[in-house]
Image (cartoon, rainbow, N blue to C red; front, side):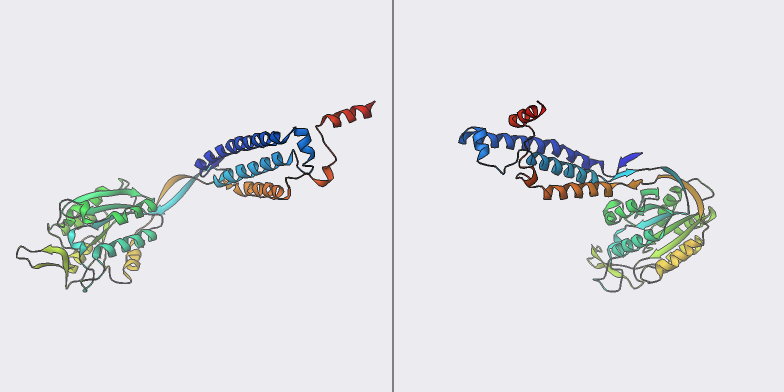
Length: 348
């Protein structure tokens, strides 16, 4: 089996006939200019070192080299085979808080990194640690939304990170119970797969029932771990004020976050802790990995070195061929009438 990693580059091969036409046009224009000076056979004697054949040879070599480089860019591959791979992991649904309170500082300093930005950074590092696990993403505020179903494509998962912001949820507030239930519905029906929900939030739950939802998840064999963002002393929410005009202060509810984790048979970690992700990873490792099979296509052996070598060889040959006649072939004219007549005379 022979294929190309980047077949779109093969369209550049259309340049080859284009250069051929340009070369033929240039040679025709040259002959027309020479005819202005006199008869071609007479003018040819005035240019004894001009070769009739080397320009055609050089353009041929250059075009072969160009075609080889185009094929090289397309990355030809040979020997690709279908292969069955078996991977072991767990299913992880991430419930990400995008309520307005996440815009507040994650530290005691009003100009500190926002909880949302710190949560994005933690999520990116977390995804890098999930290895063969499947990951999905639920975002929530006053209501919940399935942002990304379970997938093993972590590159796609990371693409969502910069898009996470409060504008994605029209109804603001914080309904953690709704997020837990939606995350539970996002898992596969496979009973032998171990499952976990990672809740990233400042735990300002406005609707209640979060602990009951966590208990329900635990009863269904789903572990809930919580990453808390912010500080218990609170921070001013920029751009928001009370009806009396006073600034809105929002704080991390660590007690509720810890209670949710306990009810969900998981752990609570503070997002500001340097060991947060390590502790969370250790907790997830306690879940037994389940095997699941995926069909993948292994990339064939790369063939571009062959075409790179061909391009180099033809360019090298072209460099050493000059446009004037080759010295040891100066006395030979393979196609002139005189040469043909001389050969006939020799035969007699």
